[in-house]
Image 1 (cartoon, rainbow, N blue to C red):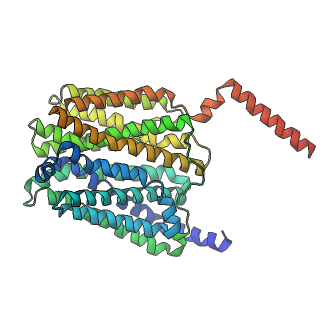
Image 2: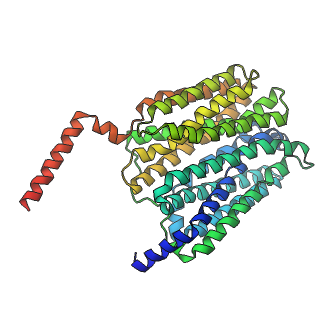
Length: 425
């Protein structure tokens, strides 16, 4: 990069930073309502299209799967066509698909628009994360916290509002589903201002693409990905089916939506709490604590769902929110360079979201086979328990290596060899 190009990028950074932060918040706020709004209206959608619970779960499982698959090509697309162009196209696809789903009259149209929702969220989410790393390298943790909080806030509002709107709107679930396209459009407008302000300089900024190979043969990377997958499997399973489960038990649609909103709201609160408590790179104690709370909350939901449902969902959400926040930092704790961290992030996202996609589908299928959600939610207890079992093995690689005597000896030998070579020169 020439000095002139570097100065141009520094000027853009200085001018557009406040606008960029505002745009990140607006975009993040609109990335989850298209998914979260499915839960409160799912019983109505199943009835309108005569779908089984397993088929209905595709409305969240498909986006999960696509979020994993499209995390990989997003950086390449940004380099090839420009980050802002791809991001704006992704937001336009998300807005159009969210609105189009409200007008779907066939199962094919319903699923096709769901695919559009998934691709739009996948590309936009991957590029926003890369933008934060490239633009705010010294404040990445702060900006990622703001980004995560905005995601969760959008989820909470969607969970609380969708059900009541569906109950009173003449068009029922269609207005409740389609209205969230307006929120995406607001984010699109915000990012358009960023693109105009930055001009061509923004297109040359690295979108966070990794040149490192993915850690396919690394045991610790697989454990991190498995843990992250379990977290997201639980999140999207509960997000999809909690409202429907409580409606089946006789709780009104609006109140069931509030239970779901409590889940997303407490989940949001847990993000900064666990982040501030876990100050050491070895986060195993707090990961285990979050997993333990998730197990306890899910046992309450599975065993006595009608007794203090807001309490049990809050305990579960607080634990799961903590594991989500700390789980997102595990790739950074285990890597040394930005490129290596990007490779781990891409791998963890790919594996994690593919695992997560199975959750709503399996829960829906078990509901079809057994006639209730009881067995399915006990299965989720098992998934949370597996997180508790994995947590002790999530010590960061460099701490793990430093504490092994044989590794320390190898490091000393390498240093001696390096000194010998330099002495010969």
